[in-house]
Amino acid sequence: MSADPVDFDLASLRPGSPEHKHLLARFFFDTHVEYDPEHIAWPTLTAEEQQRLTRLPFWQEAVSTENITSHTVTAAASLESDPELSRAIALQGFEEQRHARLLAALTAHYRIPIEFPAPYTPHNLQDDFLFAGFGECFDSFFAFGLFALARESGYFPAALVTVFEPVMDEEVRHILFFVNWVKARRLQLPWWQRPVFRARCAWIILKQVASRVKTARSLGGADASAANSENFTLTAHQDIGAPVTLRGLLAKCLEENERRMARYDARLLRPRLVPALARGLYRVLPKRL
Ligand SMILES: [Fe+2]
Ligand SMILES: [Fe+2]
Image (cartoon, rainbow, N blue to C red; front, side, top):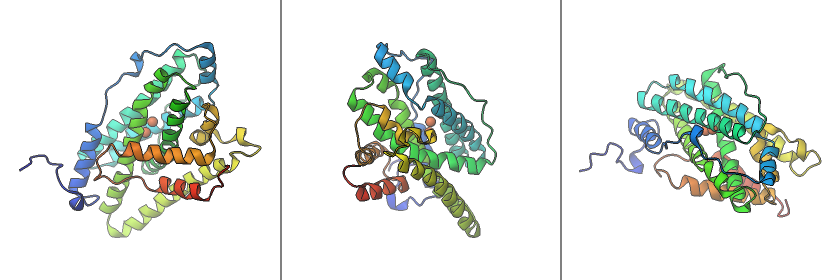
């Protein structure tokens, strides 16, 4: 009866099937939101708020990360032979570039000194795309919790926090898209190539985990302030005026991850690894940490 081409049930949605790929692309197009970073009415800050914002240690790293991600994702549209998915990846590239533009607009408006790196050129497109995607799975998960803590602490004006709400939504969509794409990509390979692809992904995830573990171990230690800025989402709770333990942060990230993911089509696969690692860590951490 229904003419909706994405109207099929969960059971029939085999990852990598034409239906799954179509639903994935449609979800991404349908949830895209228009906004223009160059025309944001930035809220006026008090001198103290301006100082807090300027003192945040991650602006330079955020600009560098967006530079790498935006150029990698834009180029990665060419990896995909399915025209709809290729357009969806190109749209994600546009959104990542918009994040870079938003950061440029914010740092210019509030006079935060930043050096803008030369446009990034991917070396190995598939590996770079996988590295960026798995990195986003980690960073976004922690960003969801930190963002909620920043909102609740009132350390920054609500109007400023609100400007970044669409960015958070986009990161949810990006990691949702990514995990579904990775699965579809693997299942379309000839069977003998699948283990190689899986091993490649595992290696890239391990590199991301190792870098996060290094940061997590430095949290609360003598060298906490020198924690690797590359993983700023893991350390940033110290800078957003929210006195929270690592365990409390993990709980907030898990709660926010669930809340944000729940808004999107339940037939799509969810990122599972980072929430599972966070849940495991939450269980073993002593309450005071
Ligand atoms: Fe981004
Ligand atoms: Fe993203």
